[in-house]
Length: 57
Image 1 (spheres, one colour):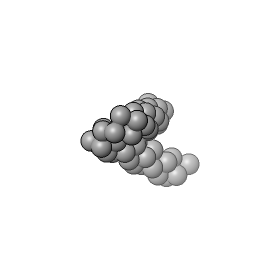
Image 2 (cartoon, rainbow, N blue to C red):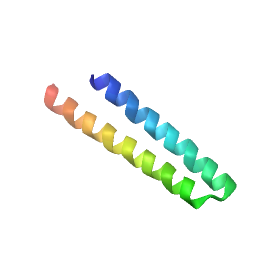
Image 3 (cartoon, rainbow, N blue to C red):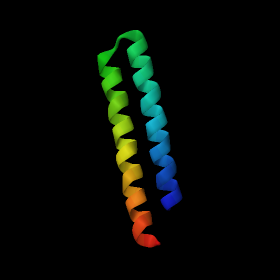
Image 4 (spheres, rainbow, N blue to C red):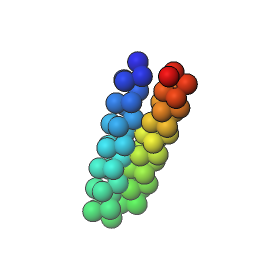
């Protein structure tokens, strides 16, 4: 389960980064903001999983 959550975090980060880049390229501020938000969600999920790992070992 933890591996699945970690992969979701990486996917969200990558998807957000791509969306932010496309938003900047076309000048769409909303898409850029959505991309940053997805990256933040991925970062938060990854931090949560790292915290869980600390207490497991």
